[in-house]
Image (tube, rainbow, N blue to C red; front, side, top):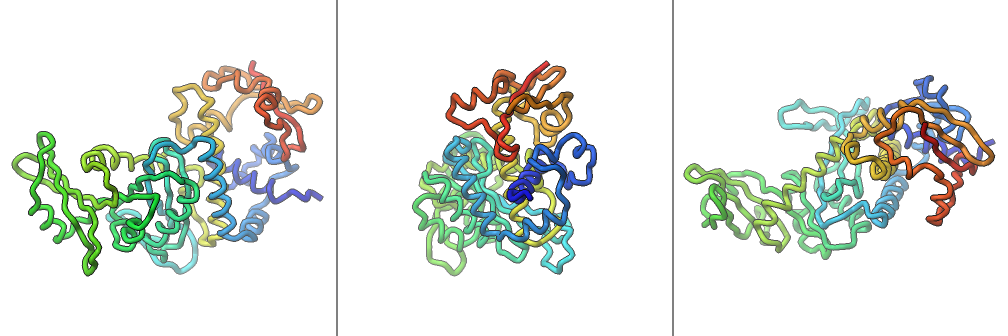
Length: 384
């Protein structure tokens, strides 16, 4: 009896995420290619076994796993800079449960969705922490839980950049008292804000661009926040505004810092196929565990990208899977206590020197080259 079956099942899920496929257990070709051995098992586990394993663990345990992963990634240098992009990522769900429906985009019909919320390092584009909820959870409440978890990973002062969904009094009240984070959010384009923007005196920065500042309080609230407005055009004007708790220079916030928010959209575009774009159930124990496995896979493939030649570092997750992880000519053999993987044909995207004589390279770095889930075998590579 294999007493370590649970982590081996989890490893299978991590490998599925890295391959950007759903339920590889149906693909017998992968089974014949030794996919089950990669997970330290003699076979691929069934859907029922996966369901039972994930449902036996709580969402808190999965959050703690992602939190510990974030701390390790911080120590490994995966997060750089002082800008953090915050964004909700709503996944259309095929759940049969009765649940509130929301619009993924304003021009789309309302649908059943699973809400995920991500914090991403704007400089590196790497996910720091994620939070998940049903559609019944308000965006502000979920975002505050996400920020509280992110604070346990990022200890240095940082600027949180979010979208208009986060333009709420509750969020700004909390962040204004926060010792570590500031917040920058576009103001909603209401009649009240339009009147405020048109009445301001603007400082011309360059042709067609001017900036102004004023204080702003939410309706019925006394707390004042910093409102930065921008005016576009020379004769016919267009206006937009941002609310912030930061004391940074206004031009820097608008022209440089806020543009970095798109790093989170790039993250979704690059990594969606790792399992961030599907949700067949609303069982949060299962969904959180799946998300944690996907985050592990994403962290591992990020390290892999560092050892690719430059032209291939911009591949999205599916492209990386197809070209690097899934379809290569090669063979596997065992010599003494080492599994030797031989690749045939061109391998211009790999830095071969990083993989040849891998056990000794790991030993020189103080890392045990034995792989626990492969029965303590070592792993080495050949290229022909």
